[in-house]
Amino acid sequence: MTVSEHAYDMRTTEETVLEVENASVTFDMDRGESRVLDDVSLDIQRGEILGIVGESGSGKSMFASSLLDAVVDPGVLTGDITYHPPDGEPIDVLDLNKRELRQLRWEEISMVFQGAMSSFNPTTTIRTHFEETLQAHDADVKEGMERAREILTDLYLDPNRVLDVHPHELSGGMQQRALIALSLVLEPEVLVMDEPTAALDLLMQRSILKMLREVQEKYDLTLVFITHDLPLVAELADRLAVMYAFEFVEVGACQDILEDATHPYTRALLNATPNLSTDVEEMKPIEGSSPDPVNVPQGCSYHPRCPLATDECTRDDPDYYDVGDGHRAACHHWERARRELPLSTRESVETEER
Image (cartoon, rainbow, N blue to C red; front, side):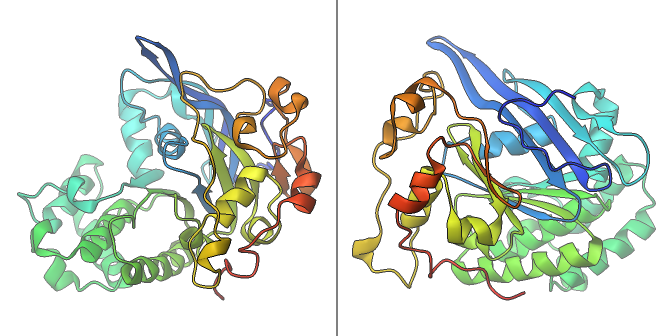
C-alpha cells in the first residue's frame, strides 16, 4: 500500500479502526482553489482517545466531517478513508451509497457537534429524538430506549425527567450530555466530538470530560475529540495530533507532546496556552497569522512564522521525522526546536491522574 509523504504508519489489522490516507478537501472559489484539508494521513487506533488540536481555522472540523464523508457541498473530498469494523471486511467510506452511509454514520461512527441546541429539534421531546433515531435505523425501539436510559444514567442524568422534556427545558450541560447519549444509542464503535464543550463553563467542561472517560471505558469506544483548547484535551486524550494549515504537523502520545514537543508550532501553541502556573509575562502569543487556504506557502507551511526557518523550509515540505516511540513531527529542524525553543508550560500543562 502506498503511503503519502505525510503519512505515518503504526497500523495493524487488529488495532486500526479508522485509516485516513491522502485526504484532501477543496472548494472552488472566484479567487482560486481553497484547500481546507491538505493531503492528510492518520490512523486512529481502536479504543484510544485521540485529541485533535490547533488554532481556529486549521482544518480540525473539516477532518472530522471527512471521517463520516459529511463534507458539505460544494466541498470535494478526495483520498481514502477506511473503516475497520470489529468483524468483517474493511469498509471504504467514500465508496458507500446514501443508505450505507446513513447506516455507517450512526451505527458505526457517530458525531457530536458544538452546541446541542442546534442539533435538537426544539419542538419535540428528548424521548422523541431517541425513538425517531432508533426507528430510522430499524432498531428495536423498546430495547433501544432501555439502552438510552442506561446511557443517560451513566452521564448523571435522570431519564425519568430528561426524556419527557423539550431541549430548551434543560441546561446547556444537560443538553450536551443528552446529545452524547443520543449519539451512543445505536452502539457505535467510534464517537467523533467536534468542540463539544466550547459553549459550556469551565466546571461543566471538566465534569463532561470525566463522564466521557467513564463512558469510553464502559462501552469500549474510540473517541476523537476535536478542540482548540489544549489543556482541556490534555485531561482526556491518550494521543494528540496537532494541526496547522490544514495538515498534521506533530503526532504522539499526549504526555510526550506536552513535555517534549518537537515541532516549533506545537511549542509555540503550548507557550501561548493560558494556565494558572505560568506568569502572564511568560505567555507568548504566536506572531503572525495562519495562512490563507487559497495561498498556503510553499515548503513548510509554518515557515513564515517560524523562528528556525531556513531556505530548506521554504523550499521543501518536510516528511515526518521519527522523534521517539510513536512520536513524529513534520519539521526539518525538530532537534533544534528541542534545544532552542524553551517550553514555559512544561511543568504546568499536565494530564490529571486517571
